[in-house]
Length: 217
Image 1 (tube, rainbow, N blue to C red):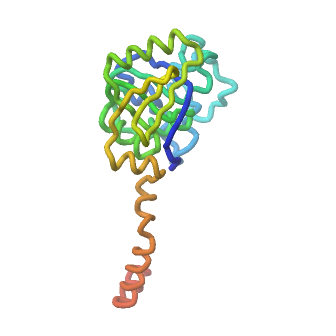
Image 2: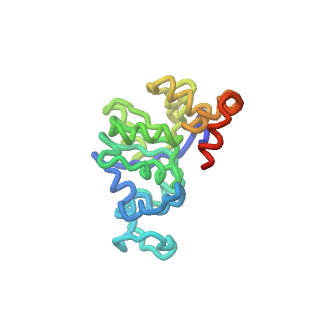
Image 3: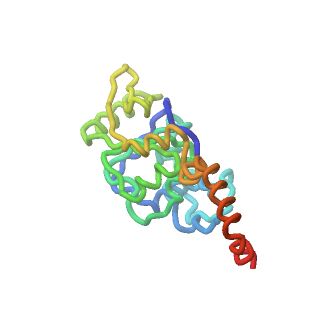
C-alpha cells in the first residue's frame, strides 16, 4: 500500500450529499476479480452521457458529460475530493475506494462518511478527513472562487494547510495513522512478523511432522 505522509494536490468539489457507492462505481463494474482498472469508471453514470456504461468500453470512445465536475478542465488532475455529508453511503463494496484511488485521489474531505466506506478507505491507502460542516462549506466557496485551488494534507501533523498558510486540524485514530504513514495494509502488518511466523512453522514441523503429511494429502 502506498504511504501517505504529506500530500499537496488540486481540489475538486463534489457538491452533493449522500453520494452512495453505486454512484461511485456502478454495480456492473464489480464483476472483475482483479483490484485494478476501476478508475475509468469512477462516477460512471455522471461522467458519461452514453449510458449504461459497460465493462471493457474504451474510455476514448465514451461521451463525457461536460457538466460533470471531474470533466471540467479546471479540475483535471485533482487528487483531493471535497464532498458533502454522508459520503460513501449505500452498499459496502470495497471497489468504491479502489475506484477513487485509481482515478488519482489520495484524500477525501467531508463533514461525515458512511462507516464501512470510511473503514475501507484506510485499508486501501485513501485518507478520509472529517471536518466541521461550516469549514467544508467555506472550502467549497474558496474552491469555486479560485481556479487551481490546492490544499496540503500533512498526516503526521494532522493538519490541512490552506494556500494562505492557515492550518485546519483533523483527527485520525492513532493505529490508522500509523498504518497510512507506513504504507501498511492488513497483509503488510502481518508480514512485519514474518520471521516469527517462519520460526513457528519450523518448530511445529519439527515437533509434529505428521501435520505436513496430513496437510499434503
